[in-house]
Image (cartoon, rainbow, N blue to C red; front, side, top):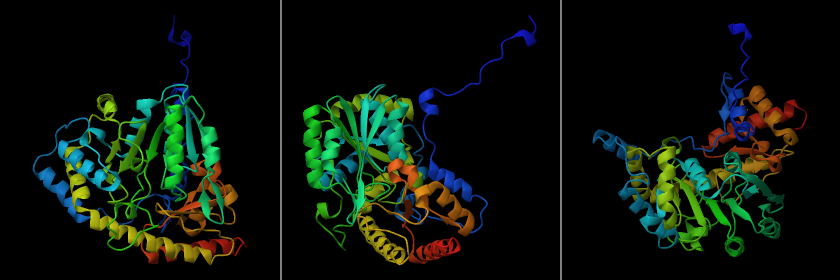
Length: 407
């Protein structure tokens, strides 16, 4: 048989569940900005400030001391102890036996899903929502159903009865992100209490993405001392440490460590041996010198975090006032996170609108459709920057609307 007689091989593809994942529309808009001069990027969820010097110095010292080797799968003991103390101060007694260090918050979310979800399982998620949370269970073959927040005069609100009705017996996992990306919505203590009781009755796992818990403005004030004034309501305030609740957190937001890729999980001690196996087969461990930086963050960073929250609250209020003066814009000040999720002319086709904003006036915001169908009609603007940058962005928005006859 000659080579020409051999059957033509089929095109190699990833498995169907992976091919069906939706690509990031935030990245799609950002990619459209490459090569465009003087773009103002408000599309990603990070500050324009670098990580504080005391954290960078701790990593430098660890590198100089040779902290470049493998560590324990669940994290170095000093960091797990520091995180246990930090979580205990904010949410009640927590031991290192309930803490696992991960290579970023998103890695923690993947690990949490891998612990409890398999092919064919039913998962419920509250949306609009950062797409990673909705897509991660699908990688594992799970079926994800959504319950949408509603938007009105009070901003984004949860229909609690609708959520409870969706949490039927046989549901394996509930995904909650509060404070929420993209809306800034924060789940109230009473809502958490009702959801926790319902999930207890039906044996449903709660995976709570609480990476924005410190970016909470309802009680932000200088020198706030009470723990509940320094953090959004958390399921950790209500649940015991050994029930079906997994809380995911990250160093990215409260200490401006987005590029460091360091996070943690608070979970039942009974999961830790199996979680250690999953870490081994995913990343093996977080880098030692990065974990040393994490110790500095949680032990020395409280004053920095409180000042950061005040700065972000001021930026939020500033941008709300500025956007409220733009005809056709409907914006409300959210109680948490670092974004405004607002409607404006043209946002009914938000991806197309955001590409046009980049192309025509160099303004980079994220399309609401990136956060699911429930986000269409809105755009997301990260306000974690100085007011001069916000002013420049608002002026570009006004120019765009004027050019399109909507202002």
